[in-house]
Image 1: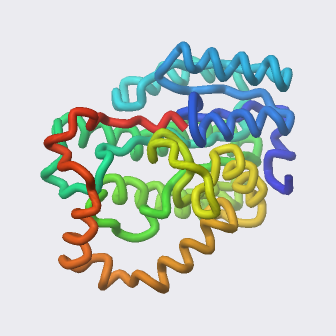
Image 2: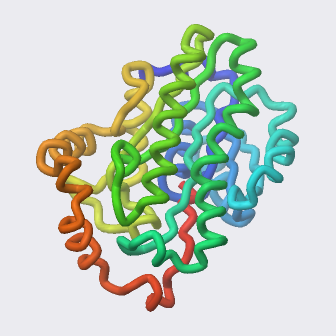
Length: 283
């Protein structure tokens, strides 16, 4: 792997949302490549399961920090305490959530007061707060790697997932600006903006030429570190991004006709779906 991981091998990577999906895949792949790992997530049982897998299969040391990123700024002193005696060389800001299983108008969001706050806390606040915790060490050493997981939906506006799209755009812009500020300090900030990866966020849809498995996606994405600071993560998703740009220009995507057509693809209105829950992407 041609990446800054080689330069920070003596230091711990921290992975948020590390108990499933993309986050778990990053934690395991970093362990496979010889690194000890700090796992951050909201489920103690799942954290211990991933930690045991890493220790048993790869023989790497793990630390776990149990927090719920939905809880806002109150959690970060606890995370700082958990990281206090560790040298952190890599941060993977992966934790994130969506608020609807279907394409939906903003006002169709059930439990909107709670969900709006949760998604902002989880998708947006977590990124700069985690960077704030690890950047001082990296700047002092003049080396480090931060990987922020955005989304193709955050590359340009996407109606009917408006809040999720906007939070991912925040991640994209914040990552690009942070890299510009700190690249002279030896710190790389990479933004990864994937299309669909088979995780609980998309109901574990079958893997095919368009949908990657989480381990396969992360393997390719990590190999882009050192070559690109903004990436779709893998060749398949890069090609899909280019095709979407050509075939679905913004004037069509933002049109009322297209929005109504897209809304009709949803099976059930969010108001009527008993299974409609906040889905935290612990990945």
